[in-house]
Image (tube, rainbow, N blue to C red; front, side, top):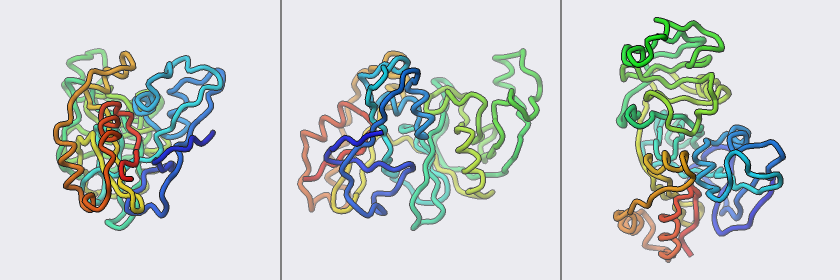
Length: 293
């Protein structure tokens, strides 16, 4: 693992609110690829999602990155603009944020989300039950598409829910583990939210029945780290699908971005590098970049 000096990225193993960062970051963390590693292996090692790692490294072959290749690890995630209460899911960066309290820093985990045609809904709900070693009862819609499925799948290695499940107030929507960790950080589910097995175990112990769950779709995030303003722009959900297929994506304008930055609290007290803003918006690497100077 190495450091690349850069003007603005805090690297932490979990998400931290910009408001809670104690020092201005100066480097991106990188990983030197070993002979047999793929980006999927690297993502799992650093608790990242596959598409977020691929988006941050558009010039790297995800399956044959090459021994010795340096890949950038998107380890800082600015918090979404949301109430700091319970679980906040951001579909754009494919991460789940948990707040133990309004003054606590967020812990975040990469997630798999609903694929095209089965999108994870946005809105607010809550956790209605917690289940260890859950039995999976496939919904009628899934059984209609896959009639070979049994009426129920008991706990075990063939259960797609993994070892832990958090049922939501939305019928048939669950935050759960997985027996296919390669789906984390990708839009591959029927709408549920899946986590790496080690992450759902940790989250399961953190949350309680009744905790609020807010699901958002915010490709653009802003935040203060010390006295510096940072911008983080992710691919849209459509662009994420394109990245997974080809590593490239067609552009989507962000006409609201300048106004969003100008109206952000405190932004009128700093000089914004607008040319850098344009580049960050165009590249959509999903990296938190300092835009104040």
